[in-house]
Image (cartoon, rainbow, N blue to C red; front, side, top):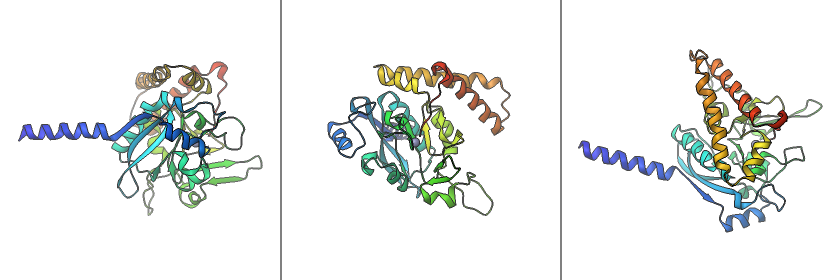
Length: 285
Ligand SMILES: [Zn+2]
């Protein structure tokens, strides 16, 4: 009986390991579709040879297991696989995880569908320079639960998707006499940060981009894209953050949330500054 149980556990463990997520290069067919749909342009900062497709499992908001996929820069793909494996293990719900060719590269359409996605060769919203999404190093997570809040020069506020306005500008999950809000970005900040996606758009004053996670400095992104051993460089970056969080344990850890948030902010600041020449921090949604 004990032996049978052991074998069963092993089989379950092996199965869950193999089924959870998978990283593959972009196929010629997918690359062609990405071009046709305007997700990938000839002048985009990286092309299909440096992109990877991560197939993953996730729970939807009804607790059903679904299969999705997300396109990212190859150098960060293993870490993205790990992020989605952790989200799956923790049963963090998502509504949809589909590559941007399913939305003709239209960010508004993807947000309307509450779709979690990454690569899209588009400029920063309202700007001219390439978004981190155009490098495949930014992920938009559950846009409905985590809206994009734009604030223009006249202090006019625009919320995308508009369906978020009445339910998700309030960022508390647990509230009296209200249903629990799930799928919120605040719940997954550490999962993303521990895998190198250090910058969360919820840290910004404007725009506030609750759905947006990105790896960090533009200089690092360019190095990752330029080097064949980009994945090794990204691992160094991740290790720097994890090391900082580890040695910061001497800050008395009494389980107070504010202390953890402070430690994380200090480590993110230290690591991203280290990878930013002349502290020319570049952000973008
Ligand atoms: Zn984004």
